[in-house]
Length: 413
Image (cartoon, rainbow, N blue to C red; front, side, top):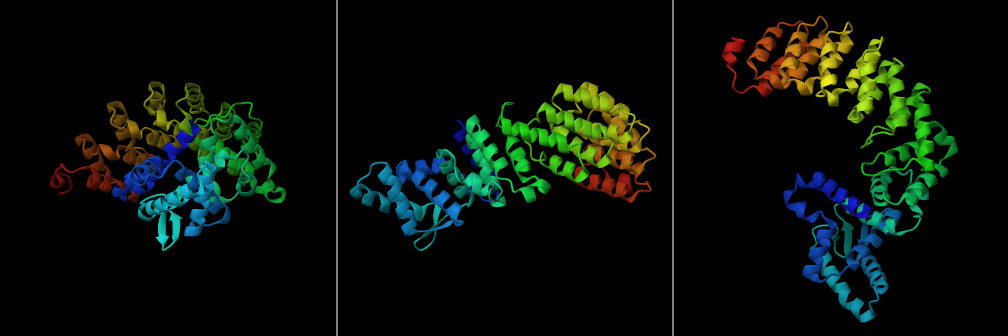
């Protein structure tokens, strides 16, 4: 199942990357469909994918995406022998294989006479990972875990082993054991790499994973450490695709409560993707009434994705009248997705009269898509007298981009 998850992710990634610009190419991005096509048209059997697996990993390890005809034939012969083909069968199959490759649209394609390459290049990574998944303990973990060029490969590999808890633990353990002491005591590359891999959507890591627990503890410790160490830890969470463990959520909440405007804002950015959790909503609502304005402001920012929840909406509307301008501005920002709600729209229109320009500007941003409403049009037109140039510019842009049916003469003449 994990191999299927990897393939589905890979195909979607290719479609997102290539199919929009080359619609004709969309049907040539699924490795399984390509293999089926070659089977039907050229009678190329199941060995084809394994030939690609071998070539891809061999090329990746040697730093090349180009293969001679001899290299392809050698890899094909090696795989066919493993399938039990005799020499006469191999001699029959290889010309068919090259006929397929010479007319192929995807995977391994001819680049120049008697030379082949994976195209798109991502195919090489996909097939290389397929090969790595068949190896008990790939040597590549030790040799390339920290290679920036292998970042996407480890993403695919993690998807591929996501249901094999022993392999996940082994991967994390080897990464931690192969740190470079002089370097990683300063930039913590193993912990950052493991944090990235642990955050991949669809990968569930049990609490008893020893290496992951070590990294969680590191994250929580560094979030309360010196500013540069805190920044490394919080950036290690930036690409997470799923909910954080509760231990990390509590550390981020504590970071907001420390009343540092910068690190608190970063913590709010990380937490907002986790706010479907009712207990986290309650924690943030509590912090939104904290005595310090930076804490209130950042807690309100973190609630942006759940602004439609009744209790959250009520609190955000209250925050539009907070004594702090930064809190009022954050509340206006978090209410943007609810701007069509009559009560929210009325409150944002009232905030257009706020004494602070930041709050007024954020209200304009939040009402930007509602300018077809005559009431909003009139308020925006009056706000063109604002002393802040950014507010005037934003209002004009909203008229230009969002109102096709209003009477321009009536508004501007």
